[in-house]
Image 1 (tube, rainbow, N blue to C red):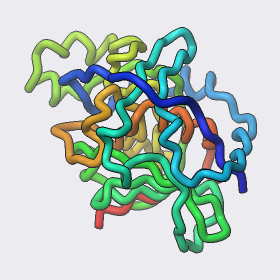
Image 2 (image 1 turned 90 degrees about the vertical axis):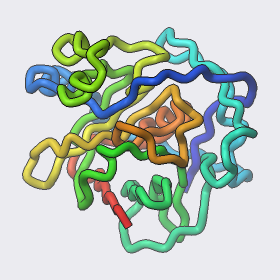
Image 3 (image 1 turned 120 degrees about the vertical axis):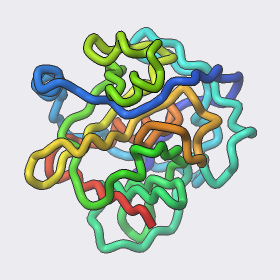
Length: 234
């Protein structure tokens, strides 16, 4: 298998207070699903290193300038790395372990790419099997109405959404999970500007990743029922 590396280390990322899963209208879903390419994912590139501390440098992506992550401040176990991982699931499967705060992308041959994640209360609300129905670069954030009640200052985003930016709570990428019946689980895997929340249980949100990590994972994921996602809560 091949492992795709990304970028270079330096700098600091400012954080924001707002975070959370997105609710998406049916119109938005159809529009985004239609816009999502279904080409085969990029091959994973081979590298001699197993840990990718050099993947967290500044990134310019689609015109947005992501700052570097001060990776030495992130617990080493939550940095992107290849680990031994025994599973009967086929390569390309995503396994989320919310208790351990890890997301595994199965590579096969007893290995997986492991990413650190942050888990919000919405991330503990669902478990089981799903698939990536669609994915989006630089998504628009629609906070849940319940969050807007708690934080009136974000109510304006419920209907119209918050547009893409480096401070958007969904970060640089989002992947939307549907169950086998084709129903939206309202469970998302997404980026986050709040790198310091990785490895923690945040106040809200689903499964958040460092933006540099979610960009890497996104490049390997092909929307469709063949991309199985297993969410484990224990």
